[in-house]
Image (tube, rainbow, N blue to C red; front, side, top):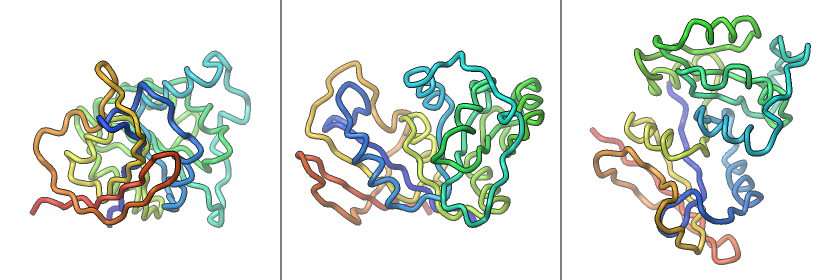
Length: 223
């Protein structure tokens, strides 16, 4: 059975994810309240995070070359990265070192470069290979459930991955932290790439301080 998938993000009133100050503490407080067993992240978002907040030239250490022991009692989520093009080659050790995730799993496709697959194997990063040119998100998530026992996935990645999850028909819920600002032209919008209307059902709403509202919608699946 495929895991339940929740898209969680902070947006402006004009559905932008950039161009304004985000309350990071509130964002992650609401995200962690879902109790994610896996955090799903797109490769572009993951690389941008490293480039923005860390020293991208920091080399791997000896401990980064092997998979850490994972206890079944460890409550931390798995970090799952969608990366069929090998964008994160040489960078996954940054995520292996992070205290808030217990393991790193990579989703790749048949078109993924062989040198990236060799990089993953040499460093004992488990990966799931589904799809021809791109990752087949539905099949990959189903395998994530089977192989890793994951029943709940939360993503707070960019609009590209969020839109792809909607288009693939695997998103179950959308969680929006609406910020009282209009971001304006030139900012990145959420759900770019969604080609047709998607029906939603409001299942929760509450004020979360400083003019922000947390909205939750169930995604109505197409029959």
